[in-house]
Image (tube, rainbow, N blue to C red; front, side, top):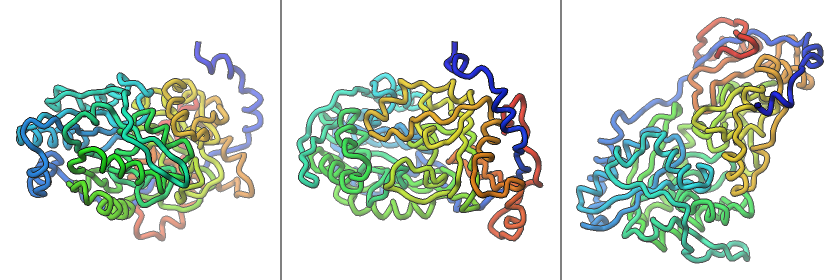
Length: 436
């Protein structure tokens, strides 16, 4: 029996309270963002590796080379990893891949390897071993504001003759700093597995603007990190550029690429709303379930930006999240169908490692999508209830088509940077379930 069947069996009282609340007509719009994309990531990675000259002097025959793989849904990740593996082989060295995921995958070796397999990253595809283990070794200690902090890394990576760090560079969903999501974070947290990630997270995200560099640079200088391969994605989450960066240049080049990544970020066509409705959250969309750079749903006080709103409704959880509903705590209301997908044992290891509990708190759970949206509208303060401002998105990655309520109709008709795709119409529900 599902938990919801025990907890929520009679909504008649709530139906009565919400009887006079109506959901306004919505219309679809599209904003045009920078869309340059690399058509063949495998060929471009090989070209970058060959032209950089870095790899030719760093990779020697018979070296065991560790290559990091991410738990994020990085566009073309498997093709880029395949190119790196093939290039290492061409140099006569022996590559292997590790899942560099901190505590993701339920903080288990099996779970982390399974994440890669879902992305099509298998030993058969890559043509090399994938060594997935939660075993770490201590590299030493760093000092930060009077504290002595241990730096740990994946044992297999530490035993390699050389390491190639791969990751996407992009703004983080919990803090701001000179290094956010990227190569430094991969070395600081991803390669640290659960134990290492916990060491860095112990004092919260407020320390990350310093500690990402402290930990990452310690790994870079205490292991034989040969070079990094990074990607930046465009506003449509497609691979926009690939860079091969020497180990010595990573500290400066990553800062430059992070600034570039900010220019690639998409945004919503409006800055303020009464209610934000997110059709799906998931780890495949953002480490926070939904990217607060877009939604404004920050779980810590160390970030900023995104949509200003009073209420957030989240309707569903992606299958790729395997029940990890991290991010639902930043919603105010969810329907029963999302609640029934939660696997708390998939979700809790993340929070016990990163120490941010806001993201896993259970919001108000209502009967269905329609009731959840109505409840969000009703509980807003000082709004025009006859014409509420509602924004509806598929997820925080896919902003190619955004639904806006009729309250925005006149404004959008004046905008030259927005294309109106439909006239205002009522949302279509079937048995309370939104047909998106």
